Length: 478
Image (cartoon, rainbow, N blue to C red; front, side, top):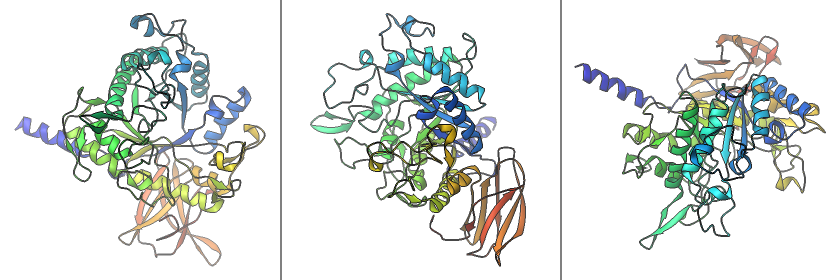
């Protein structure tokens, strides 16, 4: 009987892998923007950290090239695992770690791009540098050196807990080959190769501290839908990575090299329109389509194809829309704010734990708006300190609020600027009148269900701050 109870409890835990949010589920937000957090002058970087706080963010994601940090091949594996080896170039990462920690923000460090000495032999001209069959053992040694350096006990450096191994491995821009020939037919190559890289990265990061958090590379949202092309469909790639087969009813299959190991699953659910519009192809994954990733994840955990065998976090590590202005083809500012709110709720509802927006500030126009991203929550100024918040975008990011209807009931959801009493108001006769009062938790989240007439315009108030208005029922964010 005791064994039966343990089995039932384990099964319940596995079935709790995120599919829809629970009342206790939270959402953290932040930014991916290397032009600010890595490359800007010192005073501007500090201003950037201030902008993260002002927007209600708590997470900063920063990219580093493995090739940049380890340009010289180490003479041995033991030397490669040494965080103090003179062949490493840690200077910029040391600074980012110190500054982000000093700003009181969570830092997610993401690595990709292998040094030439760690690539496989015979890289073809079509494969981008740093993408060709990266060495898993070398990646493990490098990850251990990094994790030991930022363990909180080396040379006075702060600790880094959150680590992401690689970027968009379903694209040949970052990992090649995507496909290989076996018996005269094309078979997926990148999922198996990435499984080896990820397991090596996991082992290295955990050697620095067992409580470190390892996130999978964020997969790109769209594929080419044909074998042999440069982009593999993200849901197909994920099923192959997790060793499951079947789109609707995924089931475990044989897993070469054993289970894959990670703590959180990353994805880049860039949209194709409003935040609740699904992708056209069932193996593409935009904002509302995360079930295409969580279904195989649950099957893989149940089948023992993933370790540790427990619930995994979901992180959306890149997402955005461009705005008009400045991009004449972007989303109008008022709609951009509504889209941000709808995206945050829709991702939270599917179990996402963290969203890092790409980017914090608009890029310089350079060769033209068609070649740059104007997706910031801040208009670009002459310096980061002179950046200006985009009115509705910033307000929506700092204080998102939605009231989608489900079975005739309004789902009142939001992230208040701080914990405490939140008043829900409706607009009537040109004035805002109180409807109900809720309480935001210490993590800022509030959620309640109320019967409110369709078409009612609501907003949330926390002290002197208010959210954007939201019309209950179908609207442009549906």
